[in-house]
Image 1: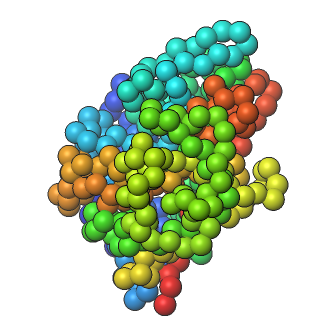
Image 2: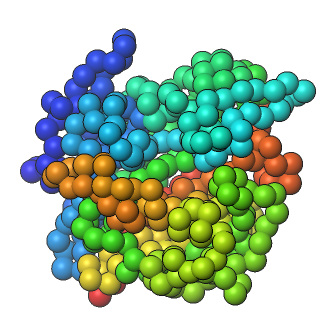
Image 3: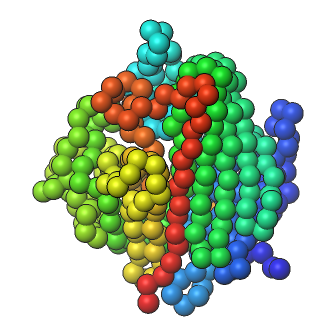
Length: 357
């Protein structure tokens, strides 16, 4: 079968330390295809059809492994994020009476696990089917300042119904923090094709977690009603993103956590829907997590030159990161991210791709 990928697999076959990296191609029987490298368990390409059946790569990323290892711009394209997704205030948290200090890699915050977090590690990988890739990683006690050995298992599964299911499992030998997410940057018109302002967004949430000037939650929930944060009905992303609203001014646009409406604590439930009119492509998101970070690519600045030599400018992609809330280790009122020995971490995120006629 002829691959849709425009990448050279040899550009991803390297040795980092004692581990080898590879580029894996996943396909389904409906024509979708995605490329994954085990460096950071990253999705590098994802081809989805438009209303006329034409396929386009809809995720941002780089053309070679070297650009992921030493990125000149955005670091997190397509990666798995851990041990703790999002920001932790002042790079520290307390647990069992002890203070743990983390790297400050986002101003005064620790972001997405630290300097050399899960996105910068080589995962063990095994392709078990045409559309299935299993990955695992052992995060050693003390790595990036986090306590305990944490063993993570995850699966990418691309179904014939054009759904990408990401399953996370983890166990530890000492109480630790665990909050994993996926960080693909999407543009449903095609990677680097346009500003995402004309993408229509719906988020299944009545509340969000307001932030301070350091992009850290202030510890309470706020209603979306009557604000530019209200996506309970479909709204163009660009319609209100530059409104004179303090929360948007703090983040330069949307970069907030929404508190998802849920029927149960653990079931896979609807979180969001995005559509793009010119292509007809749609993306629906389902998750077992209580929250979702919607990031509108505010910090992309053209310095990240991706596949095909495209420079990714500001707001040319969005990310939907299912998660527990930002800074949860320091916020007693938020759902806990503590994982104890003999407990099993289990979360599922599912992206369902479709078209509108």
